[in-house]
Image 1 (cartoon, one colour):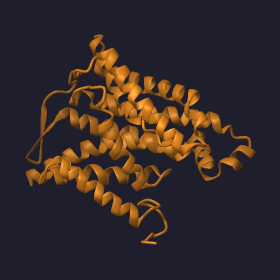
Image 2 (image 1 turned 90 degrees about the vertical axis):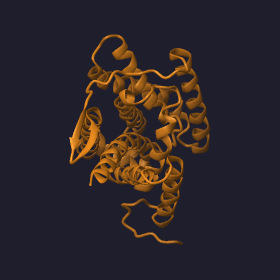
Image 3 (image 1 turned 120 degrees about the vertical axis):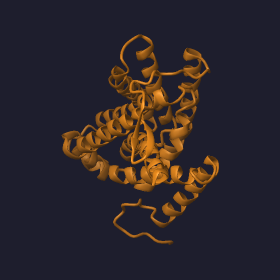
Image 4 (image 1 turned 135 degrees about the vertical axis):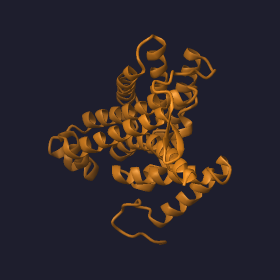
Length: 288
């Protein structure tokens, strides 16, 4: 029982982080159709923001406000200055954002150095849950992630912004004819996606070393989660993140982490082949 609870808690932690990164990525990909290979760097940006905030003597909790603000500004600047010119050129966008990813990593290294930096744990200690010992801060991360995820989904579902975004997703040309400024909403959506990824970075910073390349760790599972869930389906993205993170943690308990991740990716590919429209697609896709 203790082992099962421990696996479940660790899976919940990883799923919460992957879900945040994937949710931000899904907003960007779903609206713009752009595969942003630099999305992981917004995670690193949030983590470095947390380091700067805490190293200045401010409380860690302030970083949860500063990080998404910095991520949103950086994301909107990137969208306005570059991505907006590549919306109709998806292959070029992949190459450009991949190059930007490398540029961001070099900038982080030049400013903060290549060595890992640490962010103080704001909630030290452990809890005993059904016999399993689990860090208090990881519980905090799970709770905050759940709050951010629910708030983001409700915002996209209930707000005027979310309604317009769904209209653009369904038919961009029709939305433009009806007076919707697609460029403005695309700018805001990119900023929102970057902000959510930056929150993920700030949340994981006390649990890991903050290094220039840390975003790459979460980029691949987030992409697969978006594809599994289906673009433009936030609940599907969460299901995809649960598939990726939960299965990886469960398998890592019995086989090596590298083998576990490879096996999860293979299973994800099979699932995508069976349901190319996403796990929540209405049509039950089969081999065609």
